[in-house]
Image 1: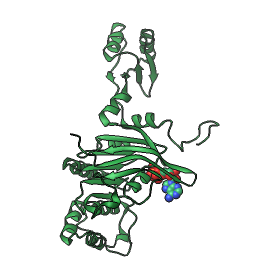
Image 2: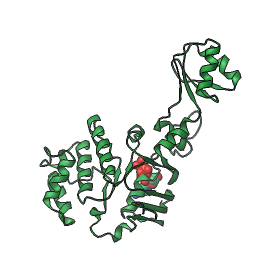
Image 3: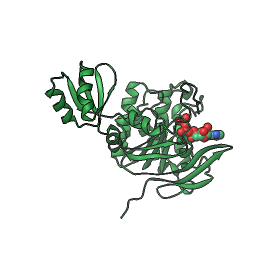
Length: 312
Ligand SMILES: Nc1ncnc2c1ncn2[C@@H]1O[C@H](COP(=O)(O)OP(=O)(O)OP(=O)(O)O)[C@@H](O)[C@H]1O
């Protein structure tokens, strides 16, 4: 038996005039884990989320939440909670009233509002006007709103935006606890370092389609390849021993070199045999940032021009 995906996006295509926003976007989001949704500016992340929520219509393809189109969901907040634009608030309305209004529209109680306010850590400020909220507080308010209907699926567009370091630590733990409860959590972000410690799975997109759809651990090991990090004060001596043995040696800053083409043990053996001093030889550990840069190298729409190259 196959478990139905919490979100299914299938062959979405969408143009805005001449601009192709989505060009065959397809992926699935599983319950019980955090799926990072990452890609360069303009890759189509927000448009995809808007199509899933029925806020934009796709030209082709379809998106399902819990196996059904969003438009067919009765009381949608109990199926999917979303934070798309934290700034979209009525500034003169008190934050609690904003949540009460949403709750009543879905047949939910004021008690539920108080629960999500506590969950989002807004207890002390919830009676203030939303217009006076910092971006971080707005993000928390948006998350509280997304949780109102206790939905099995959560979709958050750039939820780390505007959060201070404490807020970032809070949201990482909070998202993990939501996934541990069995919910599907789709999070878009540019903060790859945050996703490294947060997401279980990544859907990497560029120019309106999926470039990679894989577990975080899998992506990291594929990026690390067979590279070895070597720390030595005798860089030239090390290169003259390792290169004839088939290695490619690249200086990566300070006394650190990256060696590719030889296994870690072989590097240690060769350097030791020729008495080349070193303080570290270890398998290269890729960061998610590196994996992302490699995957999106060809898909970036707006990267600073180098030399006489074009920006596009
Ligand atoms: N309402 C709109 N009208 C015209 N073009 C649009 C509209 N919404 C999105 N686009 C275009 O569609 C493409 C995808 O945009 P989208 O906002 O979905 O990307 P994104 O990955 O969310 O980017 P970012 O990380 O910058 O938020 C971009 O080229 C964008 O300019």
